[in-house]
Image: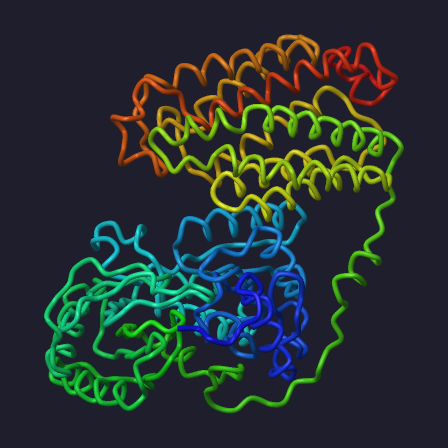
Length: 592
């Protein structure tokens, strides 16, 4: 159990601050995580890794020459927010593009994905390679659904070495993908872990038993077995990994025995010796193995075995030098320290020359978000009750948390005279970071995407409204991967987009097109009552969901209707009649 803390809610941030204080020769603190404190050659690919805290040495401990350039660090076992990933990647970027790599968990996929969209929109070429090494989490024919555990290290190490060697983004991505495909892991637990401030572990393993196939976020395994001897455990782990080997496997492997937090090094070494003999007997040559704590789970009592089947190119990069706080291999020449601006300096130096049109549109965007806040507050309980039918009942609360952060952020930014792009970006970041979860990532991403589409322009036309609608929808569909009929917000979102674009392309003014789109969204949201959920937490309770509309679709329909009503009245009867958006709303081709 974790004993040393003041306020458990501050544990992750305070631990990260202390880690940086102890490792200033390697890392510097930035808002959202850490980056290298040493010089990074201009044009080098930046490898940005990350995930929840509680896994040290992953992820911050792997930042340094020859490995990661930066790490986004979330709360305990929780994904970093999209804004955190974005800020770390911006600080890590050296001009060669960014490769994001992390374990395949839903929250990480959404938040890192949102950051990737934003980075690419700003001209920083960004790619993603998910780590999917855990053979217990999905069968081999569904390898893309597997989660990432200790195999993170092999992917990060080879991608980082390739970046250090000066390879371009295409090559670094290719090597990371190949490493991930050739990596397999399996873990066991003897007891669960305890979050800071909690009085009991997240799960218990019965006395005399072992849990097979555990996760690294306190998830129990998929089955329980009598506690084996060391030889029996080695045989179990090796046999299951060899049965799952990649099609093009050779006979040279990296073997990693990873302790999850409580198992002592002597025990890990004892087990590794038995594993090494089994691998040799199977005709494999073990190359530069690792044995120790590499991806932990707080104080979990357990361990995992990872095998990476090498080829000549992968072996070269696995053997390459690396120098980080927690992982060192070979020798690298000392690097000069670099000066990194603190968060306050970065904000102060980032001056936007806002046009009058963009500033006025920014003020209108803030007013619209205040309306969104109003409708969410009004319907919070209703949305929660609807979500509780086949979900966890937190949709209303999550939407409230997100918009309660987004609306003030937009108001503050617009009051400073910022552009619509800057206002909506601030609002989207606040929404994502405060709300968390799936809806936070999706709404945050969509609001930011709409802002980027509007930009900071001298004038606006109706086409800009259409571009903002399209960007909003694309951000959600690209991140969430939901399709029509899955019973999600997408079932209201796509009819909204289609109705808007059809009306607008047919010559209908923006205001009228928006009214048609809002009506289509509400009708489509109501129609989701006849659908069975195919995604999300409601999927296992599909029958209970029948007869009730999807809460995400309902909330979107309510918001669309409120925005439409507000703009229809505000742009007609208020001083904003002469605003850039009002002029475009008056007709498709009007100029402000």
